Length: 485
Image (tube, rainbow, N blue to C red; front, side, top):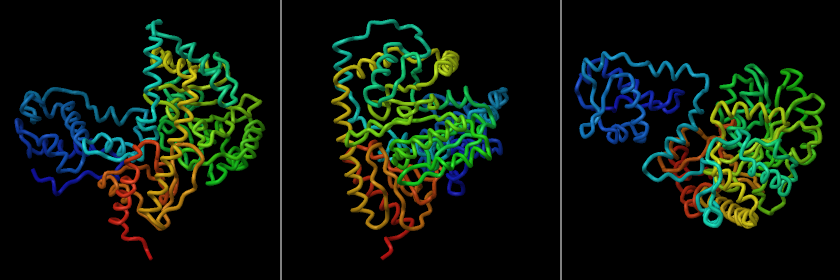
């Protein structure tokens, strides 16, 4: 089989596995692969098309769902015989194209696909902690000393009550945020909180304001909800300008404002105290709710935690989202949303319809962890290690990409927002970086200019950081040439 004349288009909106499936379907229906013929193995086709094996598995699975191929243990994937080919099977492609919940943006799907390959890839893309930053020993000790013996049935969809009580104490102590257990709903993370808000409190066509650049712009859930997403341009020193909201609201009648004011993702900026107060005043004047996503405040390297908007909110305007993913362990799947009681009841009802609530055991672990004296120690250790990783990344960038990049050093968070100093074809560079074995997030994913990109310094191991930058510099050399003198 000669695949030299065809390759999937990595810039197309259609997922690569569906491009492969469509290409193979055409060859089967044209008779190039007659009934009973054996298709290339998953590994061989993946190598020929320069994709990972998981992508080919997905493509073959789609062909199987259409009744075009069949898989037999020991003999690989074969084109189905005439009898099997006449079986009426659902047109799954049509269903996939008809759903209202849209797939993730292409670049993010591409990143996830590359991280599933067998060859090692250095990951500057995933916005989470590396495994060595997780509180594994603390959690193991808690489980050994106080094994869970509680109820294992469906729990309150608002969340495990002992966890909500622990969260109330935690928010007051560490963030100066007042939230009673009855005003909290436990979620599986910030994205579920955003999903509940966008699908339960807003309607298709509603206008919402989102920072630009912003993590929210990498999520398809806003588009899936039919919302009109408007940009609030944020500068790299102080964040968004609240006065821009007034002009947007007068033109579009904003229904909500979404912001990540402390160590913003992806830029790492902190909204100044003056702008925070002005933002609250503007929202109060026009009656616009604010959704504050605050996963990073407690990562402040020097321990001086910038105040969340919610801690300054006297009028009940802020829906406050938090998570343990960026400060403890993403695998616990513990997030929270603080809101007025009526909002919490509405969202809890939606949760009951979705999944009857989270598993009790990780909620119990989180409650024990937050109330233990070990949390303080973990947080201090985490801040030191994150600061050291950031320093290591900066040293590597300056050593291996001298004069090529510029950045503003964040005082917390997990990410470094970097700008190229010369024009760069960001998608070409990204594809070359993938071939070199390193992934990151291009700035265009966040709605930003193509000359920016995000490096998550928390995700790679410390011993991978310099090697990742070396690979990035090699990718740049191959597509753009040496640094201009």
